[in-house]
Length: 386
Ligand SMILES: Cc1cc2nc3c(=O)[nH]c(=O)nc-3n(C[C@H](O)[C@H](O)[C@H](O)COP(=O)(O)OP(=O)(O)OC[C@H]3O[C@@H](n4cnc5c(N)ncnc54)[C@H](O)[C@@H]3O)c2cc1C
Image 1 (cartoon, rainbow, N blue to C red):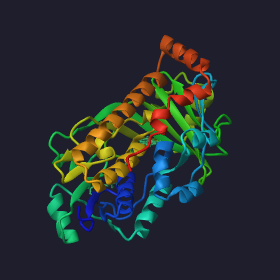
Image 2: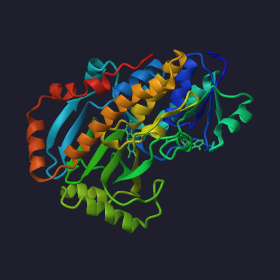
Image 3: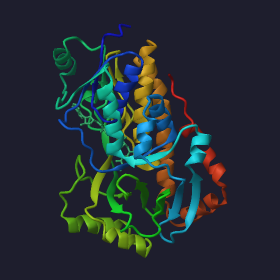
Image 4: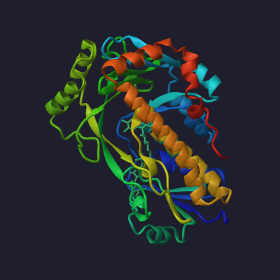
């Protein structure tokens, strides 16, 4: 392979920026095209599990990330009705020890800035902001960089245009679930919000995930419920009263303190959850998809960004080793399928009703934290191809 021939990466999200750094680490230059002129991220938090942080550490980003994230001591499941803890998986030093990498929670914009700074400082990476790539990709890119890229990487998210060029690719479909999100300052948060934990509050048909964002000194709150499609972006267009009313309806019957917290949430925004179903990820040896463009998934296992990071890193390894794109796609698809199944299981367990819920609580309460942690060894202990 000619290492001087660049790869073209469409999209400077988590997948695209990680891919650029991963290719550069293998000595392959990357031209990154991003449609927005300024990279700014809607204010959301992100959990980064050890399988993702192991890769970010290999890319040399751990010191920067440690400045902007916190490492929760545990991930707990809590009843949204009684506020009793159902189960707790240890994290913090335990995660570093068991999975040989940390578990961090941070603001998504902080991760993106960390990746972006590293890309800007890397002589093998060139970023073209304000440059939307459409269906004429190959020709358009060749014109802009003065040569034909050896590979086009579609890292352009759930609404990918590159995906449209791939015969047999999956399609984005609404999941009938929506995610609400907002932040709460530490001072206005209810006392049972814990700055040392990721807490998932569970109830019939809905759940609520809460974790601290260290730098902003606030809590990130994500509520996932069934709901109607609201379009392709975080939606502030619903009148505030309607938005709040829908949120409160989804949490009817929950603990009074949670309902009170939701009643006072400032500007909850709603995000329709789309998934990309299984389909082709590559077109011959020239075009390949990674991240949400390939496999956008529900956030029930909090693994979408982690899978984007794994895809990006392993794609560079496969390409540098001269392995075919089809081999990369096969390798990644089996991993992503297993993660999706875990997400589907969580969805069933988190939103369980009636006797299923009682059974879930009983089974989980009987398991020791170490035994619960062992369930995640295949996911968090993953060693990517390098
Ligand atoms: C509520 C919620 C909570 C989540 N929580 C977690 C979590 O805790 N942990 C986790 O791992 N994951 C989580 N995820 C999933 C995670 O956010 C996504 O999987 C991840 O951000 C996908 O990254 P990406 O780079 O593939 O796509 P994106 O972030 O969508 O990036 C795509 C980029 O491509 C650009 N682009 C698009 N089209 C074009 C074009 N034609 N030309 C040029 N540029 C283009 C876009 O502007 C954007 O910058 C969550 C998701 C949701 C909805």
